Image 1 (tube, one colour):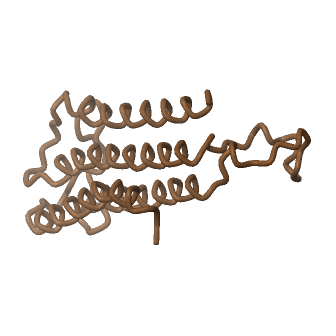
Image 2 (cartoon, helix red, strand yellow; image 1 turned 90 degrees about the vertical axis):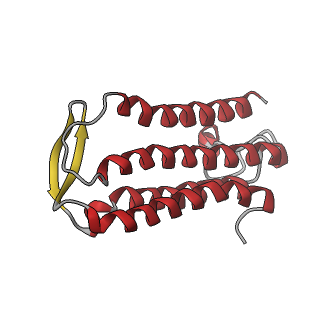
Length: 175
């Protein structure tokens, strides 16, 4: 079983977003034009590609991969022995020895749970950004114009998730 029950609940929003993206994409796919956006730049859509499962669902596949990666990172964070449980002998105890300063361990079990939750929340925010991208990708008409506010709307959750995750990690380092 992955995670304790309190952390499994943090996976729920990710699973819901992934399901929403998959179902929405499956519903929209038959109605997509023959050419769909491949790249969206600052001036709107600047590259097009033929419609295919891969090109239409790239953001869904990307989010599924990110969910697996972030879940794995959160799981490994929980399985790591925290600093407060390590024996302090005053000398290097492993082959890493002189490189022990490079090891980044949670300060405590509670800190490991906070970091794992922050990673899963960050993944949810990544999903929200990608969901907005799906709205552009899955339009019925091949329109190169993209609203100017879309870039800000898509990057805001990413920046918020990054800031939250860094803040949680830095708070752990102070203890």
